[in-house]
Length: 473
Image (cartoon, rainbow, N blue to C red; front, top):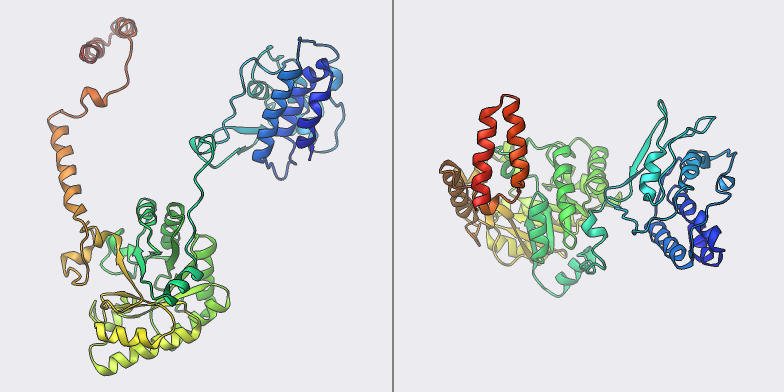
């Protein structure tokens, strides 16, 4: 490619040619993509820096002759978009200081050139290439196309070699653990911070549950949450989790109306939400058909039987299931049907331990228990529940008997918030330690005089009083 060749050839050029061509070629590489794509590879940036280095190694003296002759006078393609910027850049060789290109904050502004190249004041010698580029901006009425050079934060781009990404948990990982009878851990979480915590703890599966309707949005049931709501939560979790296997709940109403809707909703959770698999509730023939269609469409499916919160209208509340023989057999048949439909795992919620053990022994896929005893292939709890955050509306009515609290984060949060309120009311916060931004005393005096001259005596007094206290500390 052009920018690779230039970095190798430029060192062989005569000094005067290098001096004239280097800034032009560097900008050309930055703008060399077509007007339809505007793609800038990171390698181009590196090669541009290599070009600058080659220039510095070969340039012995500044020569400025036949500059304008290097600018093409005719162009029938995208090159016309940067003819004027290149013409103006010829007046400036590379600056003495290194380039400071921020891939995370900079953008290149490209403007289609009119029939007559726009005029612009000549760039000053030694001006950075970025300033030259800005000086040759578009004339009035021209369309400006802008795009960021990177989506990564600057500290990520420039922080050097990164630690290798952790090995991702996949279906093969889960199947291997199941075959070795190693318990599988799963946590339900809903946003970026919780996903980071769950991922860092080495949890195998992170479920973005429709229980976000209750835990995050404050509803009494899971029914109100929509597919778009779930996609928002899924995207946040996907940004925070690099290792865990991600499963997104299909919310109520997104798959019951037919297999076409079921497949469409599942595909969106993967394509737009960044999930690895989806979960659906229930084992009725219609749900089994939906699960089969989704699997056949190429999406991994986790089933869910026992207590199915989306069916609260039918079951009459959050009540344990399979406590009688007939119900237990029904749950077993649903689990078998979901397994036959292609589900890779099944959640067993709020069923007696012996029933869960019988179902686990019958199936050939992992079972994940929640309130289902300790004989399942794995366990799942909600992030907020296991941390004792007590934000779930359901806690006000019936605290889940199966939920062990591994911390009492809610109490610590309340104490911290109360302490903050008390310090604010007592004007103890912010203290000087948390007021880091200073203004020189001379500037305070000048501003105070200007304020008094403008009739803002109270403002000047407040300024001097606060500044006096700050400087005394």
